[in-house]
Length: 320
Image 1 (cartoon, rainbow, N blue to C red):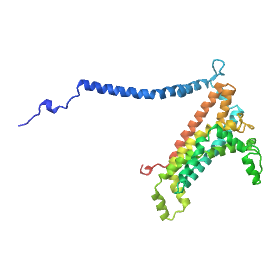
Image 2: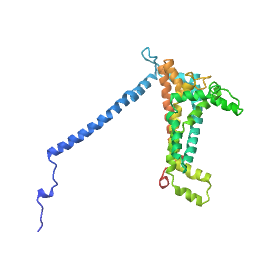
Image 3: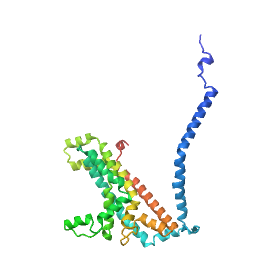
Image 4: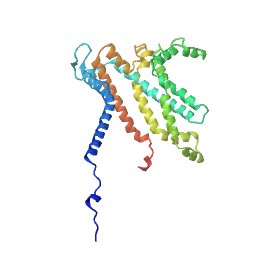
């Protein structure tokens, strides 16, 4: 004989309608609370980022000077860019700064990170001391101090004279102004240094021990263990610092006295964009410059990601 449980016993207890209503209200309340927390950020993004970007994109195709309604000119602003000698000079100065300053900054950051990765007394103090310039290095006050160090008869000039090196202020010399700004950005290596240091902590010590057993020299360990294991960190720092270098403004503005001089030697891209937009009130032209910079940075970012497949090694790549 087969025993069959009554339907009431075999069925799972159903949630009473009032309980289901409470669950729905609670979920709806959680959703509304989430949107309420997101609302200030979304509003700020629309009003302060997305909205101005769309407005700038429209203005890039217009002749607009803040005092009259925008007049549609199509691609005229973009065509004018490549016939503007100051615009081409701005690209030359910026490219030199990016191509020289960024690698030097990363090399300095990696070198100091490798030293601090050793078990040294007071390493915590040195980490803080080396990181400090990256906190204040982009400020106007530091740019003012940096300019005072390199003027005629300044501290750097005095040191050069002491060692018998030909003196002369760096600030007024067109051949020295960009190197001076490159030294300033290299001095701000604290942020990439901390990231490199965190990456070095993740390299397994067993790899170095096995290499030592095989008789590998320190330089072999560096090239065949340290650099490959750090390649994702190098890629991140390289991309971030390259993007930041394209946007240098405050230090160039302060050191040049807001002129881009001497002889246009500090006429960086963003500085020239500022001149066009807020000195000459050519907002359409400045907007076109801004969007060209956006496209260039986007293309460089894509190039970095495409090329990273050839030299960036992630954990587990061997098994793919």
